[in-house]
Length: 169
Image 1 (cartoon, rainbow, N blue to C red):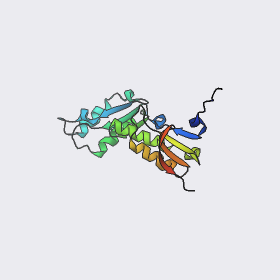
Image 2: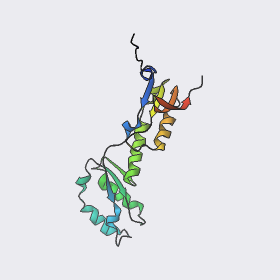
Image 3: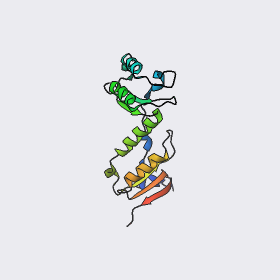
Image 4: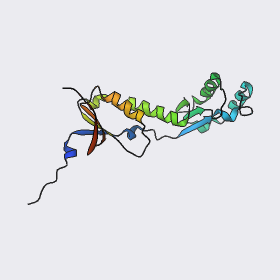
């Protein structure tokens, strides 16, 4: 007599949500204002404007671009505006801050676009450990999005979960 192996996880009706599916995989180019500082400290308007006029903006075509200053300098707000005026026609997206901050912002925007209706009255497992650096902020955001609609939210893998939320009866 042979025993039939039953996959209880497959029959459980759990929906696994892997946040890595929304993690930005695009390269983020960096435009560093440090390269345009006089003596590494001061941004001179006339020279800065001239330098921007002679910058090859085509290298940022269809790219995500992070505009930052890696030097410890005070950068006036208009400098970022001026760079944006050159990047806007060519770049896919621009952001003031580091490439890592931009990646995190893109990630959050994508998570916020998840349609919670797909998870209405469902038992959802938000996948844990993975290959990409999904931070706690992403798990917080997906919980905020799913809690109003999901029957239950768990963290981990379908075979070993940590209960997070269960809708009251």
